[in-house]
Structures are given as C-alpha cells and as structure tokens.
Image 1 (cartoon, rainbow, N blue to C red):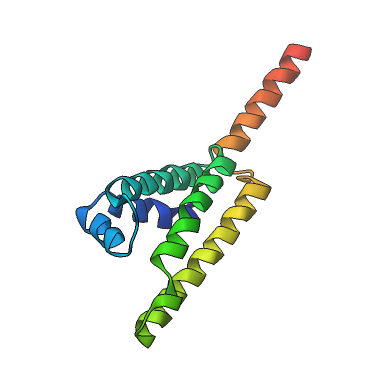
Image 2: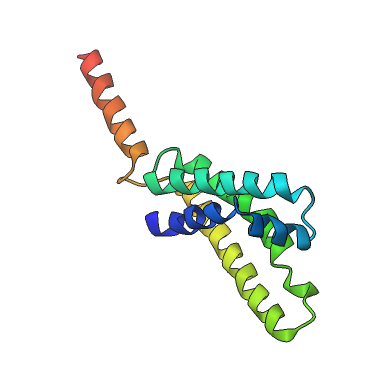
Length: 133
C-alpha cells in the first residue's frame, strides 16, 4: 500500500504549483486554478488514506476520482501530433489505467491486516467480547 500510495502523495504536492496549474490550463482544463489544487487534495488525501490503511476503501475512491479525468484530459495520446509525444502520453495513459485497476482492488479487498482499519476492527472486537462477558 505504501509504495502504491507514494505516487499520489508525491504527485499531489506538484498540484499546488503555478507551473502545474499553467500546464493544465494549456491542456484545456477548465478552471485550472481551482480544479488542479482540488485534484491535488484528492490525490493527497486518497494516497495518505491508502498508505495508512485508514478508510482505505474511501481513499481508493478518491484516487479513482482523481485518476479518471486526469488520465483522459492530461494524457490524451490520440491527440498528439508528434510520434514520441504520443508514445510518452500513451505510456502515462496506460500507467494510470493500471493504477485505477489497483485502486479498484484496494476498494474491493480493503486495506489488509497491517492497517489502521484492521487495528480498529480488532480493538472493537475485543471490546465487544469484553462487554458481552
């Protein structure tokens, strides 16, 4: 989870820079000065949620909601006029599709046994047993 989430945490930091906002505006993103920082916040919260295993399913949803529009708007390889640019953007497009698949797996299976979610479930189960005794 930590390795998977690190790409979103690191990418999120760039979403608050003027260069990233200008690049998105040049790519045709409407209201880039609002949407880019907002998407960075989604990536940051989703990534941290997955890394910590705290509400990881909701973190996976945030990551998917971040990736879906970014993949289509920022990595539209089909619109590139130069072959090397098209090849580079296709690689980024496919990487993001793969990351969405991984996020879907986290959404389905949850955060696993080494997570804050699992610790919370264990704590609740222990206290429920103590109350029943």
